[in-house]
Amino acid sequence: MNIVILAAGMGKRMRSALPKVLHPLAGKPLLAHVIETARTMSPTRLVVVVGHGGDRVREMVGATDIAFATQDKQLGTGHAVMQAVDQLDESVPTLVLYGDVPLTRADLVLLSCKAYDLEDAITAIRPVVGERTVVLPVLNGLAHLERLDAAFGESRVLGGLCHISATSTPDGAVLHLSNGQGAAVHSITFGERTPHAPRERTEAIRDVFATANFDSVLAENVMQDMWEKFTFLTSLAAMTCLMRATVGEIVATDEGAALNEAMFLACERVAAASGYPNRQAARERGLNVLTQAGSPLTASMLRDLESGGRVEADHIVGDMLRRGRALGVDVSLLRVAFAHLQAYQQRLLRAAI
Image (tube, rainbow, N blue to C red; front, side, top):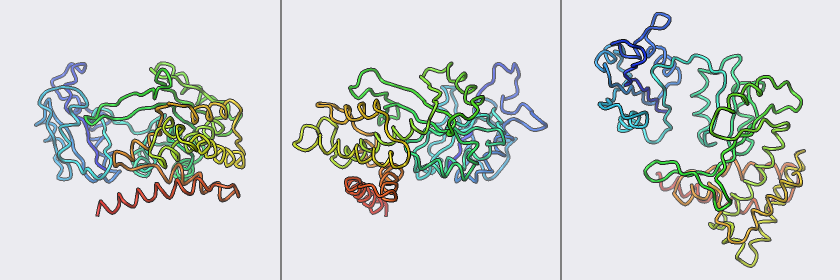
């Protein structure tokens, strides 16, 4: 993992000629605390971006394991990170830290990585997870919960999911999509994974989220909500990736609507056998979306696949397949879809050699 520490700011609010990151805290400069935390993660590359007072910052750091990049003009956070790009290892994820935020423990960690980056994300957040820290993952699927429980303890890990349709453009901009289903949505649903558990900490999170520019729901039974999304998303990803087509293009074929429905019902049976049968509203909504004529909807997994990127095949389709097999549910269609995705992944591996 790369780590980039941003230390180029002037810190005008400090009303001091001393670079902001060099102001002392507990006997050491702010930046020194951040570097110590970064080193605990054993980064592949550790880069400090300097600007105002750069020579003084370099002198304070004085370490051979740290590279420096310079932001000559103060053009914002994104621009600062761009100055370090040439010194990063493109084959691993990058964590960006602020040089003036010596965070030692977090109250809440909102985890929103892709499943294939989960291990790196666990490494990245481990130094700030303390006894009272709450981890709120909004990854797709369910398989990540077991891994996070093992890493941090089940009592620290909430249930959560998000509803958003977005993609990145070639120049790195994030494009918020509606997929032709009306206004673009952006919401987080979260809660304790055990119904009727005390809600003090989740109510505190709800109050913080209420100030943000997205919708949030404190769920009564978040595991039910997660299973309903898992059921729908697996069906959507499996079919749109298998057919390399939108919902509308699949439905326009002779057998497409029936196959989409069959995939959804198979996933629904797995959920029911796991103790989380779809509620009627979720079933109707899922079937309506998956059989809508002319719909431009696809899973983000298909967009990743078509762009030659990594996909969450094992975490979504593979996990539903394994759960179904273990419970004796007929998951024949999932077998075909998962084999298709695995074949794509084999091609990616071969191209990387």
